[in-house]
Image 1: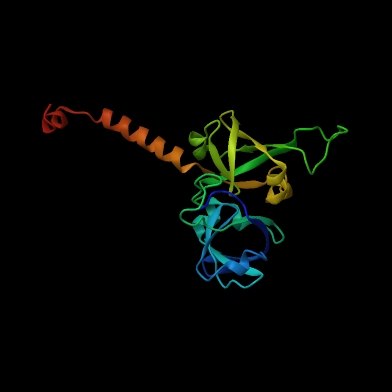
Image 2: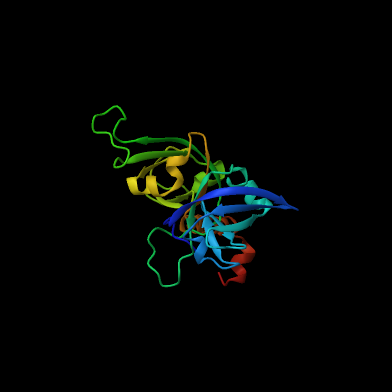
Length: 224
């Protein structure tokens, strides 16, 4: 389990096809040195298994499901990826519960500073930003204003949702510490809905279904 608090970014070095899987190599001094073979880690919101780690690099294999559902398989060497190690049991939850199970890829529609670039007070290092992401259709049912969402593995709060796009306030620390400042408009971004919202939605659907399935035989069997 992760919490969406990114520890550092890494640099994608290569993608290599290896008989049915695609292996990525990531340069990540700092995190790589703390990994052991078989450890889990979040890479731009995708839970992967570390292979052959050394003090500078680690590798990971992408299954076809990961290639189909996330942006990782389409990244080019040199791309920045967000990295997070799993949260130890008993540790404070700084963000929200992030499983690393991406629901789909959205599209970055805009990332604009709150202070206009032409303003005398504009400073890229200190301004807040507004991120807008077009959410894939299968994920929209779980977008809740003021609720949580993971974008590229980052725990964020939905400030607005128009039925298709979410708007999110981005602090300077998040802008510079993550890969957001490296992405272009139109870039695919990994989106994971809040698992608690998904569970609540499933419960509501189950309750509605049980109502619709109410029959005379069920009532008799249950003593009514």
